[in-house]
Image (cartoon, rainbow, N blue to C red; front, side):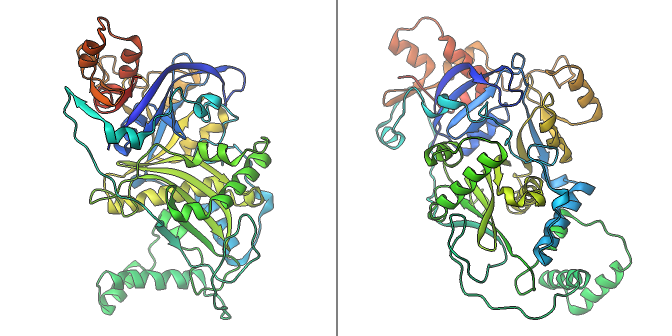
Length: 500
């Protein structure tokens, strides 16, 4: 399996989705097919996808420089605001208490982990994203591809169907069918009084120790030794305090992760679209979108699902994380699971539940999800939050997840977000973050490297040097040179650049 892209070059006909005042500057390409490995390398060079359209802001000339941001999920540290939000959700689930006076405002510092503040700008890319110059029937092309003057190692992928990963308790009871509801199974009523939270935590701790193989005596010794010590709770500890199956509670929250190409997802497509439409009209004051636009933006993906010994149990690819409250869909997180990260694409929720600060809660859930995948696949250690736009105050909340890092737009090295860095960005919207003046892009393309750019021409793929000979080109095409510089030496020699 390999990536096939159609490079558009510089795109400057789209209004900025952040400042609303200027025209954004970016480079774009349409991905007909893309491996997760290639996309991981691309986002580590400042690229981002919206549906099948991939774009890279021209940082030194665009009105709102967009720095790629990631959080080291393995070293994540909770702050007081995070704890408050998780406890608020847990209280609501236990007793149904609404704290409307502390509601989350849209697109503020308590906002979403993904780039929800778009306004029809860079993230969606308008007609460019929906109308590529040429659609390639990838399966048919791959069947007939011929090799010319190039050695290429193919890869295989497994088909995916159904649920990839489930977390949370089974729902019970039944509810009337609505666009955002799904059929529920028969459940049993719970009449016993709820146990105190502290007692439940102690019981869960004992159960975990027993599952590790410790004897009952060893468990008691551990519990006595820990008694009285002020142990800082982890993210997982706080999330785990939500009501479990069998415990009396006002509500049940179930989080399931489904691949966008699975039957499970297709069964819930109408529910997720209805929720998205409600979110866009109520939160962003946008006119209702057609389901085809929703699918182009948040369902269709060039990433090819893959699963094997080097992947987590759910595999690599594009997924929707669905938040079901008592069989009602109240939020969706769109994510890509990649070889070394979980990349947040978008997050939308039911405005009726804004008081739960679902944007921030969703980002914390995605950090926890990344940490869980790390236990299965240690290469997955980072949580990518899209772009950090320091010149847009409403997007600065992303720096609240610590420790976080920004990508240098010139050297493509990672740098921790510090007070000094933020002060530097206060002075200049565009900055070379790497302060070593001698540092260079390790993945840069030299003139001699252009000969190795991989080209797809008709049903034949070849190196650019062979393509030049076959087409009698004497000079390097500027479009090919620009493409290679933007995607880097590794990807330009591995992805197929479509040249009709």
